[in-house]
Image (cartoon, rainbow, N blue to C red; front, side):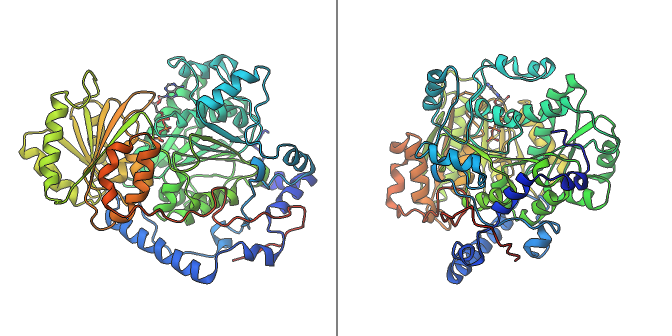
Length: 564
Ligand SMILES: Nc1ncnc2c1ncn2[C@@H]1O[C@H](COP(=O)(O)OP(=O)(O)OP(=O)(O)O)[C@@H](O)[C@H]1O
């Protein structure tokens, strides 16, 4: 796929097969599609709980540009491009978007088989898949060594510091290099950035863009700091190929970003939704030639209310089969499955570990239950002392400690508490300027300061070396956030430790059951015993496959478009 032609030309050339595939993405008929949607009562309840969650988030918010605009109709959201709303089926591990004859045949053949490695060395592959608890929906032969990766040698250079591909890399690279859409779900710190970064750069290396058609890869990330980090990684890996990236995020002036957008070598844009959309709407950033789109940590972006922005951004990229769309995260709640179903085409889904909520097993989890929340301060000081004395992780060089709070106004209070005890600390949250945020992160990354107190702005994606211990001073609003927070340690194959303070107050009590499940499934059940005094109820799960409301449908029936 050259992927560099203007979308209009591409559309005109749309093959019969493509048109068929698009039709198959539509619901089979209005009544059956409607029956897959929630009842009115369920919808109201869901909407209420979503709004409440959003309100709480806004209180705890980290200062990113939270969208204020009222929700528009589905059609407006996608910029006039009507998207299918029927979630595809994953029966037999094969997505129902694969509705052409070829895939229908495959579907029948692969009954009850989710993983279908097709390798000469199939036993080695099978062993790899089993050992790493990998499930693949789609046909994939994992790449087990860097040498068998079909990419330019200049690009391979950035991999030479590692021994082997991580499981998510091994299984995402083949379908991505073959031009497929991919959903990648793998634990925190497992190398997801290069899992999408290498194929993105390999694709850019193959093509020379026409004048004005140079932005071909777009990565959308939920926080400014994560966007900057991803941009840095892609910039470094693309440098030997002469490929440049620009990072667009809010909280700073647009002038410098506009200047960088003029760089002729520019092929990649990484950014946060608000600023990306702003600059695109101003006409200084053209996404019309983006044929490789990554939604990183999409679940967090939806949590933050960015769905409308994301849909608009997607609407500005190349449409139809010309675009590869990737979604990567360590957590994969129902909300994001719906988004995936409406924007991806016949995606290969790679899950390392469980499809459900899974924490990185290399991070030891300890849960400290408090009867009196005021005891938390004394406990925090005691733990930091133990970290200093290397009594928490004996023999480890990982001296940095990350302390998570929930609300922005908690951060200065904990900061004062620790400063009064003589600790050198820095803080990262939404009430400080972007410069101060970057300075705090940099001081912590370089080891100038050993303790960082942060809100959930630091929970996702940040790859900070030598974080030995994560302390959850206040429990987050969701167990997904818990999994991401503790994932700031134990990265790149290392061991880590997390200590979580749990009081059962406010939102916490309702999360005890879900937390216990994560703790138990990661093998630390004994450390979570204290949670048992709270109700161990679990939120009712909808369907464990794509789409919150799933129904087996006959995909050969011609669909009817539904416009909301
Ligand atoms: N093949 C590999 N072998 C060992 N380490 C690797 C490999 N690929 C990447 N890494 C390193 O692993 C660390 C974590 O990678 P990365 O930040 O991409 O994780 P992630 O899966 O995106 O995590 P998160 O879910 O928290 O965003 C980085 O320091 C990265 O350099």
